[in-house]
Length: 213
Image (cartoon, rainbow, N blue to C red; front, side):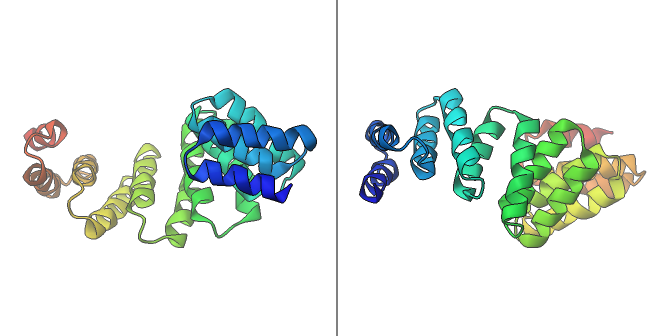
């Protein structure tokens, strides 16, 4: 059985999805509760665009083996792709319990909670992700964005400035900083942020509009 699963994994990692699917199904005909075969089958089905079938197979893998964090991660990917935010949130919370030091869990939990309207929960998740991976500009930028949505403009500016310090060439971070500075009544600082954005991308309409204000 192990050799058959290894063969399926070899097909999968080599990009031979049809062969991987066939090999997984052969294993499952013998042992329908083989969680790793279900996980590989779900991942392969997702790779060929059969997202409904992938979700069902991965859901079964996680039901059979609740501690299978790879299957759970793959199920999360499917649910996020399908924008099934509440279902993704439930899986992400399970993953955060299984592996609390994994930045992926907290980063994607922040995203899912933002989409469901739980901005405070989103901020907590993204803060955890940033603490685990301080070099992640994406998580920090997302944190700044959620703070904007939550109306905490001072904190948003502070967060976005940290993004800019790490990556000065990110046009959108400059633009968002300028917009928040305008809201905070700091037009001179806002103009500087918009000017920096325009130096990086002279065609950025949001920066030009912000500067015109």
